[in-house]
Image (cartoon, rainbow, N blue to C red; front, side, top):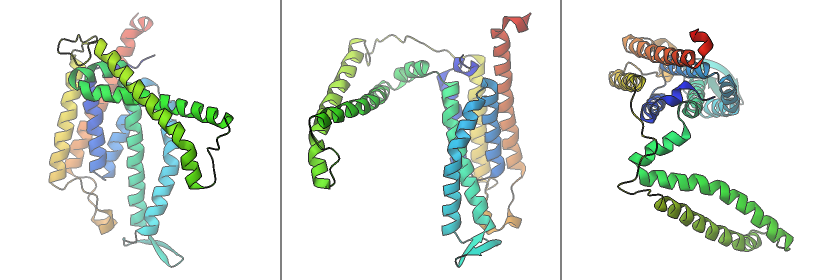
Length: 295
């Protein structure tokens, strides 16, 4: 069952996810990042996608471990020493900073997951093709060609292996020479496939000035609310960032860090408004879709 958010306009949900991505990359303040994490949790909760939440966390664990280890090994800055190992100094500040970097990676993973939950692929393709048709066509060709290339590559390797061609030679030169026929055929088939997709799109009127939009999307009240809240949150974040109120300079020492201030409280309030809007809209749509609850 599709989530209620897929009924929203693609422009609104795309801007919302873009704002989240920009804020994640632009700040290290844990309070702001925690607010975005709560936004993700609210979307997963509203759509009942707890499995995706756990899968994203499982994907995050190995990357987090690698990030923390590398940062603590190569970064010596910090005032609080945790321990010494093999003559190297490991500080609390480097551990905290690495943990925040890892947390930001988790948030980015969740952004891509909520894109799938909030945007229908067919509606997205229809909307983007009406705005940026050439780029959309190239993306559609690429998304269709890569899986076909992978499957075709496996079939060609099987055929040439049955003919006695050693595609896994020990020497690099022999391996390159044996794979040249496979790659040439694969390239030719890929070009033919790209031309077929382009010709089919042209026959259907793609990139034509008078092409009909099959799924013309209008803006509803929820779309304007999401657009407005996203833009206000982004503008408020820019203002707070320019005033230096969103800085988190952990290597200056833990005592000098101003994590919570008026700017951060403003961002937290705006973030809470976004969460409330998403939850209220999801609850309202679920009640309208369930006739038993209306009775």
